[in-house]
Structure formats: C-alpha cells, structure tokens
Length: 193
Image (cartoon, rainbow, N blue to C red):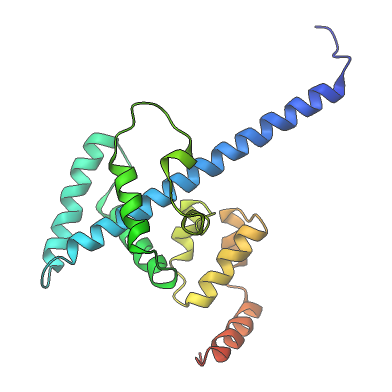
C-alpha cells in the first residue's frame, strides 16, 4: 500500500469523521433522554387522571412493560418505566416545561415518520427544553439518586462542563467539599441542611 503523501488531508478527514461520530452519539443520547422524559410525563399524567391510583399505576407499568418489550425488545421493564416516571418527576419540578412544549413533544413523538429525519426535525421543541438534557441516560439515572436539587444540579453541570464519563461522575460523587458548596447555596436560598 502506498504511503499517503498528504498527511494533512488524512488528519483533516479523520478529525471530521471523529467529530461526526461524536455528534451522532450526542444526538442519539439526547433523543433517547427526551423520549424517556416524555414517556415519564405520559405515565404520570395517565396515573393522575383519577383518585388514588397506586394499584392502577403498578398494573399500568407492568402492562406497558409487557407490550413495549414485545414490540421494542429489552429496556422497557416495569422498573425502567418507573425510572422514566421518576426522571420526569425529578426534572419537571426543578425545570418545568410549558404546556405547549409538552403537547408539541407529544404530537411529534406520536406522529409516524415515513422518512428518516434529523433529531432537530423530529424534536421541534424550544432550545431551552432540549438543551437541559445534555448527558446520557446513565448519567441521569445516577443523578436522580441525589435528593438535594442543588447538589444534583451541581453534579449535572460539572458532568457536562467537564465532559465526565459515568465512571468519573461516580468517582466525584460524593465529594465532601461539594457539601460545603451546597450548604452555602441552600443557605442563600433560605434553606439549611
């Protein structure tokens, strides 16, 4: 095989391909996280249509799990659906979506597309909604275990800003100097830990 004379061309093309692959991973992650958020919202809204529906909620998750697993394969156990529900509850409280945004996401997700579209075309939602989910689903599963909203937000921001892998997030949490920072934030907001 002949040596490539133009190494700059090879370097530029390689960088382009690497960036494209990273962009695809980010787009897929964001699409799935938005989808899981929406699934969680739909489950919560369905469960709240009526009186005490705890038993209904359990049956609903089990039934949905059966049908979704049959249709889409692994990843839709009742516990995974419960995590999606919890994800919506955790992130809708601190970062509320407008009713219009929720309806827009629902209509876009429920509309069957005949052609493949880009993520931005599929999710025609305000930037503020899609921009809030910049991490992988695994990151959010870890973050949801953090009860303090300020602490969770801190680790979410740090994970994104420093491009932490899930392993790095797990290593950083709990980092005790963070507790002091969170206590300061909470006291500034009139809360105490």
